[in-house]
Image 1 (cartoon, helix red, strand yellow):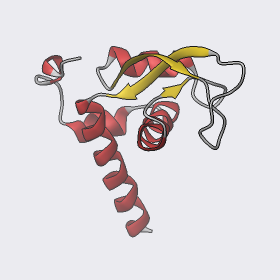
Image 2 (image 1 turned 30 degrees about the horizontal axis):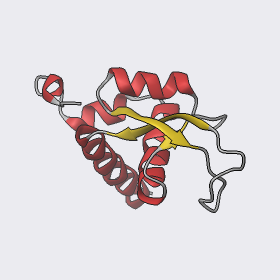
Image 3 (image 1 turned 180 degrees about the vertical axis):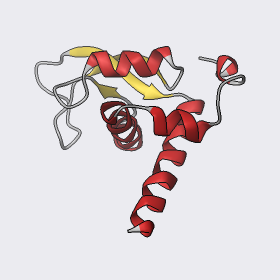
Image 4 (image 1 turned 180 degrees about the horizontal axis):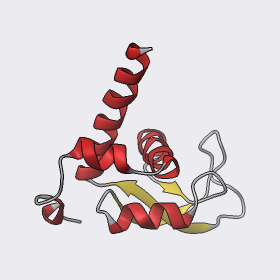
Length: 109
């Protein structure tokens, strides 16, 4: 997915700060899942509704069908597949900005 549609938007910081808490949490969890598993499937913690809002904003994208795995990264038997999601390039910038924002808030206290 191209990030061209984000070129005329507000700076990344304004976008990230304006997101609801559930969307900011989803960005963090998508980033963590990308580092460890490659993609994240929606669940009770990260709902499909929240991720689809990020997809609409160009922050996340579908990774296609992914094999379900347990917390240790082992594929669940029998194999089951669900749609997985990952951050786009713009989403990675949003994650970086979000971490910087959290760091500034912690330093201000």
